[in-house]
Image (cartoon, rainbow, N blue to C red; front, side):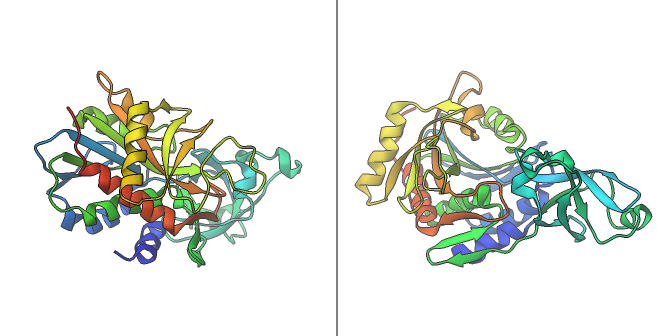
Length: 332
């Protein structure tokens, strides 16, 4: 599987929270050769099952992204917006964007506040309309909006919107591609609505009732300029094995197992201590009577901006580690 080609395909699919179906269709086409069965649930999770007689293992990578939603169209033709997921005005301001119907626009200021005091609700989208009537022929209230910036390579790294978490989806696809037969009963979940409250993983975990859970997501990179060291992983040092974040404290034995698998198989690994945010690991480990849950993360700079950055070597390391865990000996 060509990483860059596949990543471009995943990123270009429209998929803010609540609108993941286009991403889901792309992923289903890519995953179909490697799954015994594929299903969807009511929340829009895409669940790829590779049958085995061993313990049930649920891998989860969210396929939704942050975005904006149109809340009002004014008489001048500007579209007022609200956030879909955790966005700040500074991350969004002056970004090129597109609506699901293909209409493009630009995020601009709609307030005389200082930029540092702007909220997302203070922003507007200029769709090139000269009046509200003209704008309403292009878009309507309730339409979702996403970044419209390209995917580029920079040496061994990639710069793109929505690396959070299309790189996590890519990791699962790469891991599925390399698996042959496996004793463990494997579920690869491409979850919905993570960015607005980790909703999809909650229902998927309840239905699957796994023995083990592994959340695959990006993590904040500590080598981003201006880092206040609220995270520990850095770009280019391999797969980040989650120790904790705001949503989970991972079982130490599972952390050590993932670290040992990396060391045994020559996969570069590092520890991921994140003092804020969370992943699908949060709802997975709390489902039913509890699930033995960990995380494999890709360090990401400039998260939730139109130009996120990850190291392709880290993506490959995460895929290798996920595949190694999927075929490892696990106790019920």
